[in-house]
Amino acid sequence: MTTNQRGCLTLLGMVLFGIFICAGIPFILLPSSSIGVTLPVITVPGEPLHLFLPIIGEIETVNTVLGMLLADFFVLLFALLAWRASKGWTKEVPGRGQGAMEALVEGLWGITKQMAPNTPPVRNILFPLMATIFFFLLAANWGKLIPGVESVGLIHCAHEGFSGFPRDEIALQNTSGGYQLRVETPLNAGYAASHLAYEQCASFKDPVHYADFIVHELDPFRDARLTHVVEEGDTLASIAEAWNVEVEEIVAGGLPSGDKYEQYESYAEVEFSAAALLALNPNLQGMAEGAEDDHGGGHGEVVVTEETPLVAGQEVVLREELVGEDATTIENQIYVVTPFFRGAATDLNLTIGLSIISFIAIQAFGIGTLGLNYFQKFINVHALGTISKNPLGAIDFIAGLFEIVSEIGKLVSLSFRLFGAIFAGGLLYAVFLFLFGAVIPLVILGLELIVGGAQAAVFSVLTLIFCAQAMVSHVHDDEHGEAHH
Amino acid sequence: MELEIGLKAVGAGLAMIGAMGPGIGIGLMVQGAMQGIGRNPDAAGQIQTNMILGIVFAEAVAIYALVVALIILFVL
Image (cartoon, rainbow over all chains, first blue to last red; front, side, top):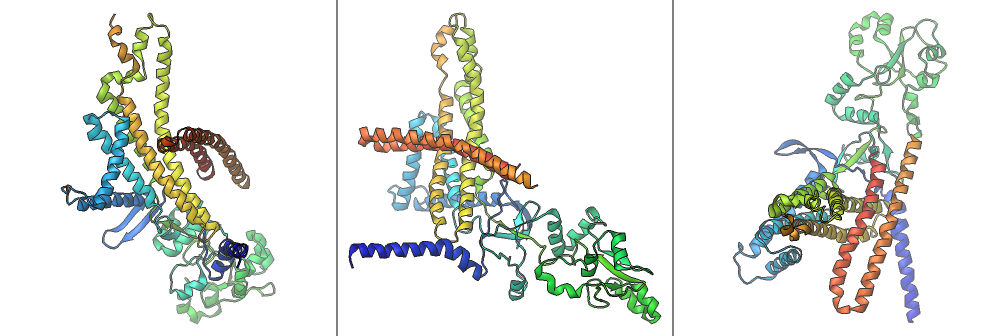
């Protein structure tokens, strides 16, 4: 086989592989085995989780807090491994593991020595701060890439504004009550859930929630079951006109429309009220009592069509209840999955918190080294003092005022750089998984490794640089002797 | 409702025009790095380190634009 022939065969193989990955898996393979990859729930704030743990009980937390605990776990694991490798910080000749960890810390110390002088505050406070931020952010950003983080989570009813999927009725029968969500078509981003959909879903699972809903939100004209007791001379048309509903709604009993439910239309219910039954047969006194709270159930149902003569005392259902244990069908329960762990740096609370810590550290180092003269960086009274000798000092004063803006800019830029890079990376990965089922998202995973490491390094090195700059006395200190004239 | 979603999408798209500047800036930075390495191949390691640092700063501005687009889409 010549080289060209081999090359052509390889090309054919690559094209077939590409077709399989990009078209075969998302459009043919996954839907036929009724697995769907969905677009994840994208929210900027972390999502709340209600967890029932075996020993601790019920806790309510946010999934980025759990992600932060995961990052903490990795940092402590690293410290534990370093402690064991160096035999309690005592081993003089390092082995391989201890050597690697020492090289890492030496590298960080080298960067610190480049930027800041080798004084006790730097050695004891600045270097630990900078190295801790680096290790913590590295653990948080790389921990986000472990399989299972940001994908495995809790199924719960979708709140308003989220898009979710209904339960799979067929799978329900196979998995004995387990929750399997139905994703029918490829590239399906879900159904938007409204507040009513959430109430319907939650009331189905939780009678306490339904009781709360009745008290606070039940609207008798929208949510409750609407029936009408037929009187003499009523026809379907007159009832429809009186209640301002369509005749078809009475005939069909208010079931949700859609081809899935056409087979159930013949079971549309019309109920006999207890009073009507008693009027027909007084011997039914005992039974009538039990029939009071029977709706949607088995007895006394008659199909109402347009030809059915209406009997006085018969109760016609105009609309089924919208919310309640019996109101929820398979279609209107919308469920969504919230991941247990989410990358810690995808939460603005963490990034802004870390940058506030850096900000306070910068000011503390400045005041600690220079005293109150540190504020001359912003309000340059020294330049104002020498304004008679050096009129251009006014420019220094104005420049000092702009330093205040720059300080706020440091706060904002540190936090949003980290947040934007990590959040956008996670989002990109999820969207790639949604579009292609396999293989191609690995490229994004590689990019995320690089970006996560770079952002951790940049945050810590920037903190170091700003603190070192704050410790350097401002220019006019050289002319200190000339200030007292 | 539809108009609102459509306008949000337009806003997010316009916000991402701001990613054009950092793209040019990173290009200029890498150009300077390439020239420096060409003149002095021994300093390639140092030049590369400083280049990466500079690229991260420039990319931060693009990320500001992305954050504004995300806020327009998902928060407002």
